[in-house]
Image 1 (cartoon, helix red, strand yellow):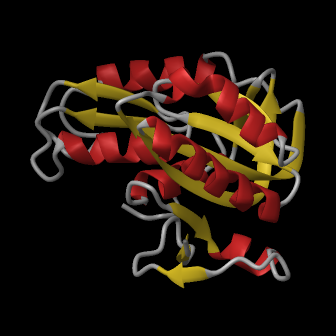
Image 2 (image 1 turned 180 degrees about the horizontal axis):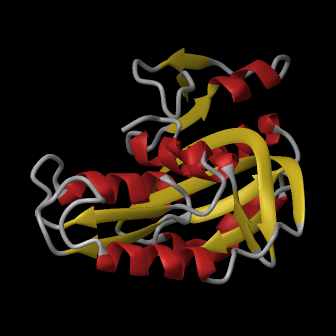
Length: 217
């Protein structure tokens, strides 16, 4: 799938027949996973073209999608460095909330959310974000929790207490691609931290079309 999917910023509906003769249902799931907030409607049938076969359920799905409630507008848009952290080991991230909060706030960051998927936090600059990610890694390792972290700087959107946008999705993808105990950053971050004394090693595969670098230990 194209790495541009996370950049789609409008409501999206993926309609797929469960026994499509050309593309399997896994393609539909990949689209939904890649497009923030996308919805999937899976219908019976094997016809690939939407205008063939039984089109009634498709038209119904489209009518509901178009006529449904639109996503609330963003209350605020701003540039931020986003750090996403996933953890594994004998202790989960939720077991170390005090240490996590202290490490984030010591670098002038804000803890946005902590779920089963991982931790999301923001910083007012990429240098602080990278330093915080490395500090969290080094703090939690002796406690039995090995983290994977991703760092990206871009515009984010705030709706209530939730953040979304390219920075969030790219940081999450970076964390998922990271090896245990490593911190991955986008080229955007490396270009903004000159003078911070940080060293990076290039990784082979880009994420969301961006070159990826690992923070050197």
